[in-house]
Amino acid sequence: MDRPVNLDLDRQRGLTVEWPDGSTQFFPVAFLRRMSPSAETRELRKQMEANPLTVLPASAHSSGPLTAEGAELVGNYAVRIRFSDGHDTGIYSWRYLRELEQQLPTQSSEN
Figure 1 (cartoon, rainbow, N blue to C red):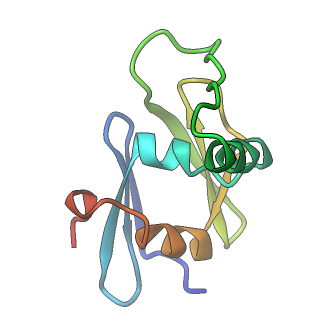
Figure 2: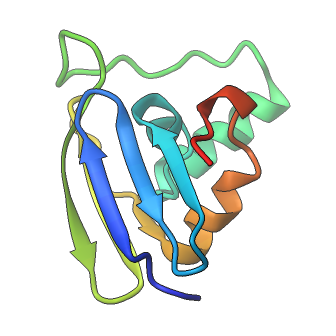
């Protein structure tokens, strides 16, 4: 999978990814947090699919709106994003970000 040409994190809004093929994609902060590839978030999504009345865990680390506090590259294959609710275990591989493009609401795309 090709590495992005540029990553631009707007801590309030989200992550813009520019790909080598010339395409650009915007991922809102809340979407990235909800779709985190971490084991705990994947399990929560499975529970919510099986039972839409699943109670979401309360965030102990955030009192305001969800933001991205920072991001760091993980080798040549991914980026890790730290969220204001304390979540920082999701590693977003370039392949996973490409897969997420298909799940974005149409109004979130900046192509």
